[in-house]
Length: 218
Image (cartoon, helix red, strand yellow):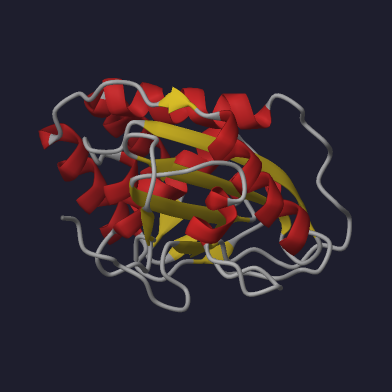
């Protein structure tokens, strides 16, 4: 039995970028690209460590210079979180790919469509639905439902890098979701966000069957 890990902002990755009123350009392939990037990182964690070494060069203490063209931004932990992620990746064993799930993708899409136009954040929908509630709308589930959300990242690499580094998240819950060997399926939905330009929701699950409980990494 896996334990529920949930707090008001559990699994929430809020990128500290300036609020932008212009909406992100639609990218119909972004959902597919994010899942492909997650699977690549699961299969080749040591290779992603090399990517983070290059990313590390953008830091000056806690200040991250010019991420994705937005201008400088202050992080919570700075280069220390990147270094810790590199060590983790070098020790992490490769994992099988996650299988794309249309059911989970629909649940993730509901959250994007609910939060994006309103500029909301968090895992609870405006109608009070939890991640597991949203999944159950579309089919029966058994086991854990895990959800991670990134705000302010407009590329697949940026979304996955943010989850892996997990700056400011004490227990590295997003990273735990990416590298959880129990999780077998994933659904991704990305779209514009009123306050943070873009958002990307990833819902994960173990075997698809009946009776889900939820977990959101934080």
